[in-house]
View 1: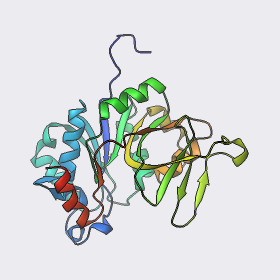
View 2 (view 1 turned 180 degrees about the horizontal axis):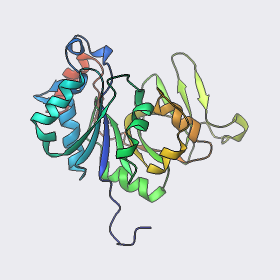
View 3 (view 1 turned 90 degrees about the horizontal axis):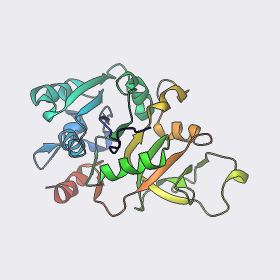
Length: 252
């Protein structure tokens, strides 16, 4: 319970920066994607500053591909004003879920933001945080109505019910079909930003490499995972070199 009367706050975040960035070649032949520059600022710097605007100055950054370059950039720039902790995955990249599990000792003391380093947005993060504390789910996922190949599936209450790949036809439901609502499930594209209750950590049964998608679908039958729509915001996944050009136009 919040006994102070003040709005709840999130003080920590984890930025997922360990990926190989294979779609971002040739930059990632010599550098980590996290340090790709957009108008003179790296993706990592931009997202650290984005978190700062929401009052978050304590970040965990996981590293694998050209890890020493990320560590060096953080050191030289003194975390761009934030306190930072490195979660070292140089031995093996653990994917999104495995990376979070490895970093759990740094994140167990309060609700936190988890975000991909290659996402740029002007989404109202404090509003998303407020929604998370208002509804008290295990996790809140930022989503939009944009077109993509893979979607989370939600019911009318914005609760996670499944996942679908519209290109391959693959679908995974979090509950048996007869336990789902009669109304059609709603497709939403995930934005790579989560707000998570640390109560998730003792519930993680998966080990080694695994994705947050698999974890959420495992947990959704017994725990509430909510979507938070921010379709009115600017958002870009800087996944390919050409998307970096578009990002430079959107985020001067």
